[in-house]
Image (cartoon, rainbow, N blue to C red; front, top):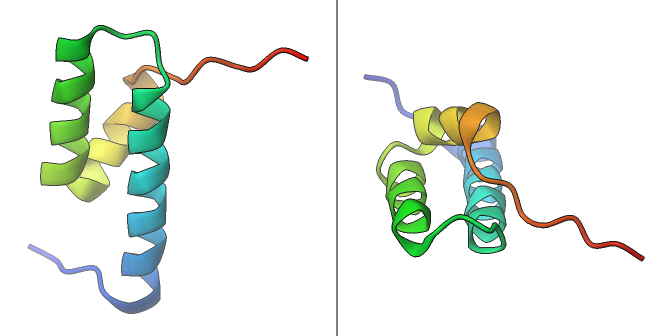
Length: 63
């Protein structure tokens, strides 16, 4: 297992927070949101990558 620390750990933390905020803003059901958030928290790098390609997105705001 490898460890992310320093600058790359900080970048991953910011990306995970962005993913969690986006999951909260999505139209997915409550159960799906909880599962996605748990995935991102438990497996930060892998969970973020899976969310990036397959996860729910926040609603785009229209002007």
